[in-house]
Image (cartoon, rainbow, N blue to C red; front, side, top):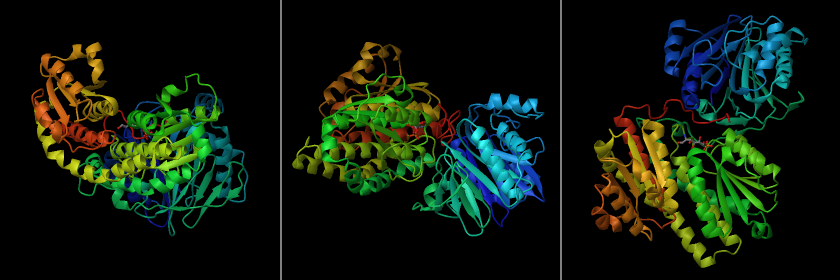
Length: 613
Ligand code: M6R
């Protein structure tokens, strides 16, 4: 939540800051701001709303400077207003700070600073950082102003509690920005005569793919020519960069009206890329030796939101293919459970961003309980990848739309592959069964490509129902989490009420909310549960529902007699069918939101990465 950015080099930093903030906007869009150092003075421009409002304000103020920092905000402390927008300054207005995260002890610090005479202008926790640096600077001596600022920042960081990443600039050091990371992400882009800093790589990917991912407790000092990295003790440490393989295009809309639509269409590729490394990576990960594997009897899956729905499907896979007992928990709830410690338990954390605070909290608990920890994650260098002993990366490229789509299908595929490999390695499934399952897995990108052709039909169908203010999604077995996901996708971007249920449950209560015309989307691919789903359709229809059957070619005829409309997706094996079914529901949500004129990529009140608990 919140995105920070910085530039130091030989060019005017302003166009880069604005462009980069647009790439980080998915992290929050309540307000935005930039500050540059110009002729030894700080110039600051801030605006409520999206980055485009800031861009307008910048055109009027026309700030110019070779060193600048910026921020896009998802409000936590204080309402979205210009005063609460970052960058924040100290009393002199010469120190500017942008920050992502939460300073837990800000009230104590604020009171202390106020008694020392500091005057605050905002309700934010961030502002204490600027005043604390100002205070610490007063008591710091060094050979140069640059070194003085560095020392004051180090001292300040030691006084802050919480999860944060922040960046500082000072009017007296116009060729230097400093970045600090503690549990919130911070990456540095290493360029030629210019260096960049941001919460996420797409912000500077156009300029460099040489990236340094900071570790918790590290501080980085950027000048146009140098990147210097320091540990918590203030000692300089080696800068190790990673070459990012995504090209800039992956982080742009490339002609699509929305990132969400582009990302829906990228799913076949995302799955293919994820599968490409699966055999080797799981081979290595599961090099958790065979004896160890045989000992794993319990698996806890933890995740939030869409990733939680993928984890729910993972539970079916692990039980069915790997023969282990699996349970799935919302990461935010996992920490309240009483679970016995064990060395033979595996905790699998599923997360696109690898930054979700609740998921990180759940993994911390798993570590305390002595569990082995595996992350299924899409972001290199993220907190989750460091918190887990093993990592399997989904390779679906950067996901920008707040509504998760391609990360979800890659997560399902990863969990399927994991369960199948685990089942094979532990002897739960024979070589013959393994070969069959693996072959089915490899054929899925092709089926996904085929499924993507249904956009036109789904779009047409949404014309009939988009004015409804309540939708119901029904599924069973592996399609139950897909019903939940279909409902989440729809409410997230259309702001209409949508609920997913296990089809067998509706008669135990939810059926009472169905009345004339309520759209009920029933997931009923032709498989062993098809007949039960036919009954569910009939039950809903008898109460006046407008039933939309999502079925496969073989189920088409029978489904026609119990529904008002159909969506036909290709047939896959029972356990891989959810990957195809969800694509139809992603299009469904997209087209309803589009018809309602909603802000699809940046729905109200949300942010892509939820880095607060
Ligand atoms: O980055 P993560 O996968 O950990 O994020 C978890 C959820 O916040 C996320 O899936 C959220 O529910 C999405 N906006 C849903 O589309």
